[in-house]
Length: 594
Image (cartoon, rainbow, N blue to C red; front, side):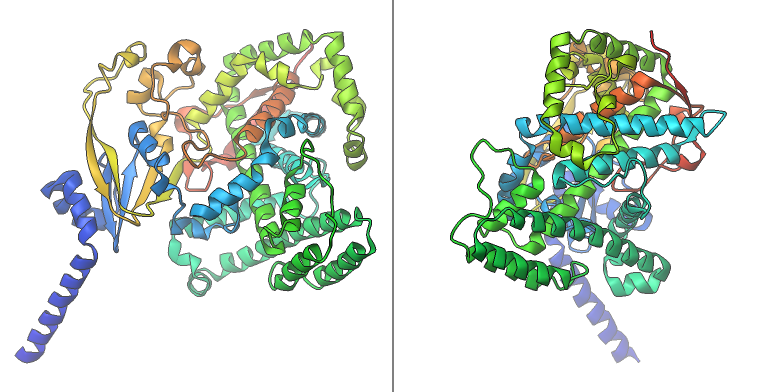
């Protein structure tokens, strides 16, 4: 018995030594960060799974999970080439094969390839679409109000309408395809996307669910739901791509290319989903490479939308059909989720703080009422040039897009530049209710970073003195961070921290973004989408849609709610979600013309 005990103890000792050796860089990092205190804290952190120090690190297996919530450290991380990649946790994301989750050189190459689709001129060409769908959304909200005597609309009903409108805009501008989602979504595509986002959040928080066998065993019901939802959205995206591919090849003139088109379409029709699409990818490449003349002649000044750019890259042999599907799925989903969530967060803040809503409405009306006859004529000329869009969106009345009554003029870039208060409202809303509350990066190799170790202020800072540096003195240390460290950046907490934002950090205070206050804070204290080397490719696109949709809604309707900002509770998700969304109602009244 004693011999067996000795063998067991020896095996345990060897196992502990092996684990310690595998974790040696992790323990060295903890020692550099906190000394003996950090080493002693580890068992407690493992047991309680609590991150309560600033910054703190917990050893998970052979990795370090580093938590940061200060702008200085976030700047160091987001601007470091070694911290460019997403982590394995995001592999639970259902659309994880496109630009959003690409790594290293692949991300750099793909980002460079897709940048032209979000150029300034291309975004300006989308404004008529933004206005038209925004007007349709406005009309649908009016019809919803006619169906209720109390003029009360649930948070979820309004979110559904806005999500459908945003998804229609996304399909029109990225895929050149009209879906009529703003009017109705009979197949439940928007609801399916939201469900997949919820399941993606679950698989990110619980990474063991990324293994299908374990996922099916632990929660068969949600697993089957995720499969059904995946199949539906994959078919939705694949059908769009196949239709556009058919149209793209139809533009060809030579018989050899028409022959390639026929063969490719035959292959595509054999594939009902993305699974097993390799033959289609090969057919696309073969068809492109077999032609001597380009399938689509595009000059340097032509503005390619997203799907056109993907087909152009395929023509050049730089993209397969598989990759076209992945990039499309990723782009449609990201634009849909982030924009709709941002719009709802801004509307909620304005409904809670109606005095700011009234001030914003006054700014909108003043700007739009000053639109000159010449500008209206220019808008009409621009709309006449959008004949192709009007044919795709016949359910939208062109007269509604440019109606001088009720301040329904089409919004142009010059109008947005004349609305500084709109910028302040949006920025403050996204500060308090940030769309992406947590950002996680993986360290690709050992790096040296300046880490903010401890906050030294003992009293609440005065926002007027933030620029003096008297109340926000922080100590820095140079730390070697080992390869494969996971860095969790808590944007939500940082953007509500009084050391960054002063005494009104927990309140809705648009003056935070006035010119007098912006110099008083760190440039990385506000990260609405992303900053640094891996910025969001569609950030300007998102802001333009957000602004135009808000102008359409606030100029026409007054929003009120009994919800209170202090009582809002949030749930884990890819984007910020409210726990009590089912219990929140908006009281919406049409605004009278002044």
